[in-house]
Image 1: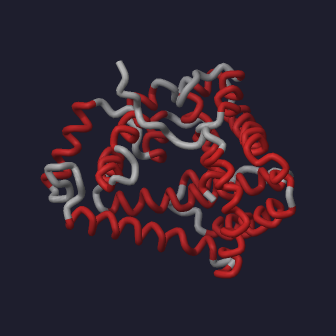
Image 2 (image 1 turned 60 degrees about the vertical axis):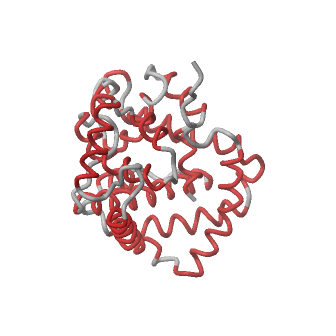
Length: 273
């Protein structure tokens, strides 16, 4: 289900909506739009809850964004942009019976999660928002809640392990699942701090000289992933195994269409001069 939510971070409709409010282009709108559910918070709150961005990068936009547009305006622009972007890539499927059914299932799971708001600030903030009427946006909002519910738990698991935001990026990059250059570029970490972070992980025995994870590093990461799964799982108890399988089946073609739409996901930096 992640692409159904994640498209909002890459779709041109989102950038256009934020720029129409006067917010800076690029990731300037990203920080304000994702944080807007929490209200006009300071940069330190965004740094804490988003976890892995270079702090000065966040401070370029937050808190100045709140003097350009109210958090409620930014939140509304994000929701409207999500609907436009999803309809662009899904076409007629956006208003299908399958979307309506998926929205109902996902909402049941998301609403059941509100009984565990403790220690989950981004989830709790989004859970305080009014539900949209459009089933497509209900599906988007549901996945937003489920994503942030999982994400807040993921940060908790990493914090217990003494993992910083930079450490998390380095560990992720060391798996080979995403190019480290993409992670460094998208979170704007400078080369010297990136290198210093690698050295810290080597001193902990987690990172090998070639930049891959050691056995100890892999064991650590697997513990974090398993703990994250365990912390996220209660959200889906309300729909059970059968409901989860049905939700996966309904959303799989939707997510595939989003990915094939061509705007979802970061691109590896060009090496051309």
